[in-house]
Structure formats: structure tokens, C-alpha cells
Length: 93
Image (cartoon, rainbow, N blue to C red):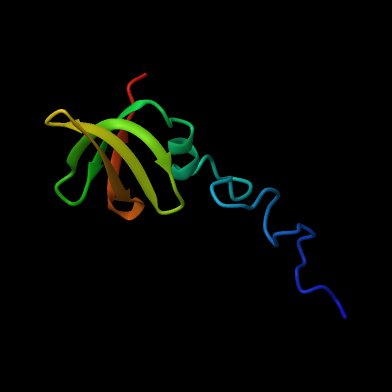
């Protein structure tokens, strides 16, 4: 019986084909890739239709969320922001 995956790659897609990796020719880095490369830096994440700014340190990036740690009234808090709610991300150079 013939193999149902005709590409010859183990994942059935392009080399690497895992979460957060480039998805083939013609595609640049995904948002996941770019955010993953800025973990540990100060960022401003603009959230929701109103583009509400959330400023803090990018702590981690998951497949469908980002975690930003910020100080609020001298208390360190973790903000979990769903990836679909992000309008823009600003990372100072």
C-alpha cells in the first residue's frame, strides 16, 4: 500500500513543521517565532479592539498565549494574554 503522506517529511509538512517554525517556502517567521525570540525583554502588547497597552517583561510564549510580567502597585503580576487578542507588540531595540 502506498504511503498516504506524499511529501517525504515525517510530519507530513515542510522540514521542521513543528509548532512555531516556518511553514515552508515563501513564509517568514511567524508571530510565535518572533515573540519567542524576544522572551526576557521589555515589551508593550496592545490588546483587544481598543488596543489597550500592557507593558512589562515578556516571560513566556505558548502556542496560544503570551505571559507578560508587570509591576502593579508594587506587586509583581503575571498577565496571560490570548494570542488571538493581540493587535500589536512593540519591542524597544
